[in-house]
Amino acid sequence: MASAAAAVEPPPKSLWADGFGRLAVRAVQIIVVVVLVAGLIWGIQQVTLVIIPLILALIFASAFGPVTMWMRKKGVPSVLATLLTLLAVVVVLTALGWLVVNAVINQWDYLSSQATKGFEQAQDWYHTLPFAVSPDQVNQVVQGIQDFVTSSQFGTGALAGVSAIASFVTGFVLMVVILFFFLKDGPRMWEFVLRPFHGSHYDRARRIGDKTVTVLGSYVRGTASVAAVDAVGIYIGLLILQVPLALPLAVLVFLLAFIPIVGAVTAGILAALVALVTNGPIVALIVVGVVVLVNQLEGNFLQPVLMGRTMKLHSFVVLVVLAGGTAIGGILGTLLAVPLTAVAWGIITVWNGPDKPAEWARRKKRRNPVPLAGDESSD
Image 1 (cartoon, helix red, strand yellow):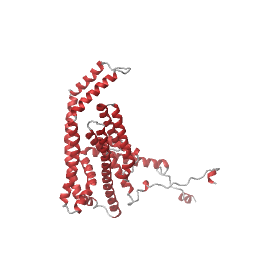
Image 2: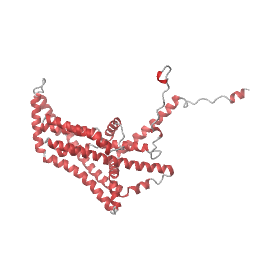
Image 3: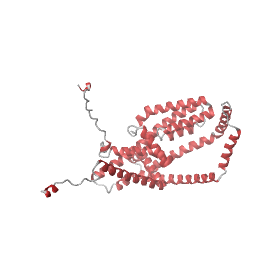
Image 4: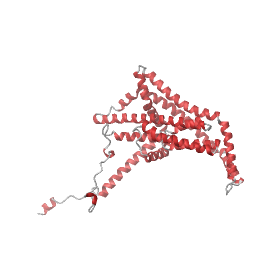
């Protein structure tokens, strides 16, 4: 009888089977994922000279790849079509840099004289304030700047700047080389990467690759179109208001437009500051109005048409991603954070099929709430 009771006695309960145990298991899983992600980010930071050109080449190849394919369909040899597309990319990037530098050099004397006048006006203005800065305090600030310029710390910073320029040139050359091979043999290279996959895994990897190229290409082309319209609109406004450095400011607007939300605000502040120094506060306020008007036209009309469904990210997500990208990768992290996040979300949306996102990312149907007792609406 005792043996029969022992036979039906339930097994001892595991410590990992209750709610707290499941919570502990989930916490360990989260810690492992965080450690792996941190290790991946650390590894990327150690080889940024290779990773950054690789990512930029992939983005440019996604944007300009259709041009290469179109020329091939028209009978242009593969190598020639690739070289023509690559030359167009290099010429566009070089032309943007040359426009900014050349315009600043040509208008530097005028800008410096106007800045001097603005500084003198600021000095006259602060004398009218209820508090005043003593000449000794001004001399201390000037002396501190002079000491910094003549210090070894400034020399170390200058050497670091030279090293940064050398790294930039190296990365640019590497990006051009990688971009050449992506444009020429990108599909074959991707097929080689997909060789280990079979069946449903191959289909998923194929969808991921196609979605990545589509999102990156649409993002670059759409953002460039919107940025060009913004730059032209602000350039016309600055010309009408006779604000100096209108061309480099317009080019800066075009470049900063690739940073969502923050870029437009930064470009508007810079344009207003130049107008304030050179043309006075009234023109600066008008410049602010022009920038706000152009940004409203962009946000309400251009982006929905040109960007389509490429960038379906909430503004809060964009701000958080921009902050994280800046903390991890600096300026390049700021530029790459949003498109890479858009790619990640695009991959999730095709994880289980062309129109089937991952299970956890699917929109859940809202259930009808249970009516409470005495609720008249349930009658």
